[in-house]
Amino acid sequence: MIRWLGFGVILTGSVFAQPVTVQKPVECVKTETLFQGLTSSDYKEKPIWLGIQSGAPLPKYSLFVNEQTKSWTLIQFDEKMSCVLGTGEASTPIFNGPKI
Image 1 (tube, rainbow, N blue to C red):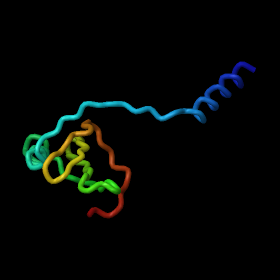
Image 2 (cartoon, helix red, strand yellow; image 1 turned 135 degrees about the horizontal axis):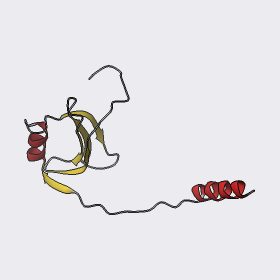
Image 3 (cartoon, helix red, strand yellow; image 1 turned 180 degrees about the vertical axis):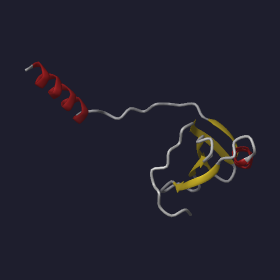
């Protein structure tokens, strides 16, 4: 009986979950500077994905990855400024389709 009550609380909580807005500090620099840094001999990351934000004049997103070290950097950029949204290690491709 207690298990079913717990399950009901979890199920009800997930159904009525409200979105939460969080603020996260990000580092931003000139686009040219960031692209040069990511592709330099220090990181050797290459862009493997590009996305364009709907309805926005210029914002784009890109994922840079170093296939040997598995490091990755997710950025948002336009013609002038780029911001690092996240970085990490142990990137794992989940799509094995044709390379672009």
